[in-house]
Image (cartoon, rainbow, N blue to C red; front, top):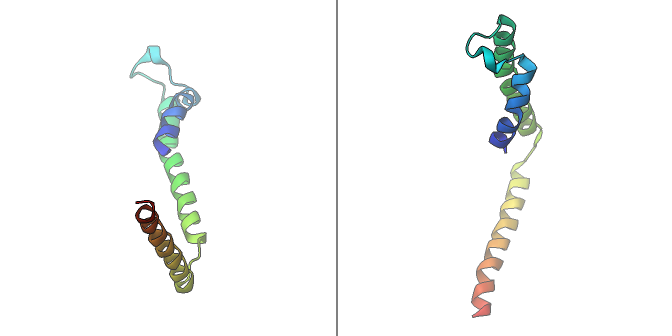
Length: 86
């Protein structure tokens, strides 16, 4: 998802920086500045959002055990289903 989003937004970001295809590598200082800003800012914001999401997901030992039991029950049910169909 992240790669698709990056590829999808890359053209818009280049336009936002003022990138001119006809200039090739001889872009303006402002263009290079904004390219550097986006190169740092976007990953930093994405990382901060990811850290916030993980940090705000509180899971206790009890909740972890409850989830493990539910997953084990699903796994046993899935194993029993093909055997019953035979």
